[in-house]
Amino acid sequence: MENDCPFCKIFTGELQVNKVYEDENTVAIVDNNPRFSEGQCVVIHKRHVDQFYQLEDDELAGLSKAVKSVANKIKKAFNSRFVSTFTRGQSVPHVHVIIFPLSELDALSSYLESTQRLIQLIKKTDAKRLDEIARLIREA
Ligand SMILES: [Zn+2]
Image (cartoon, rainbow, N blue to C red; front, side, top):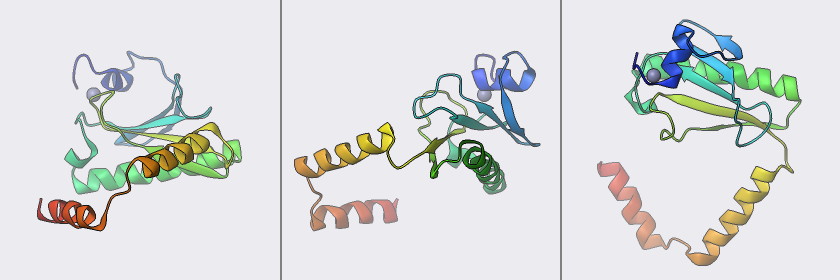
């Protein structure tokens, strides 16, 4: 528990939220400021650590299980074609996964496609750089 962490305040009841799922280690809430689509939820691990890779393996497995459960609920509730996840790890220093319903024609899909085309126009990564990137990650 960190005093100023808004997600820790959810677990103590200081912040009012719309819970859609809870188990021993995770809570999922409806995001009151969705950036991707209506129905966006946030799945939060109860232990206060900043990044998902700081969780123990079994904690991460539990978080993934909760994300899957909420994804199935979102898909059913919104009859959406896809349910996507997003983990940035910068806005709140407490592990959480943003999860939201998407269709084939939504604004985010169009944005990502246009951004991808723009990036490809600017610079396509050459084979030598791809080899270098792979080596950097493998040897890290
Ligand atoms: Zn916290």
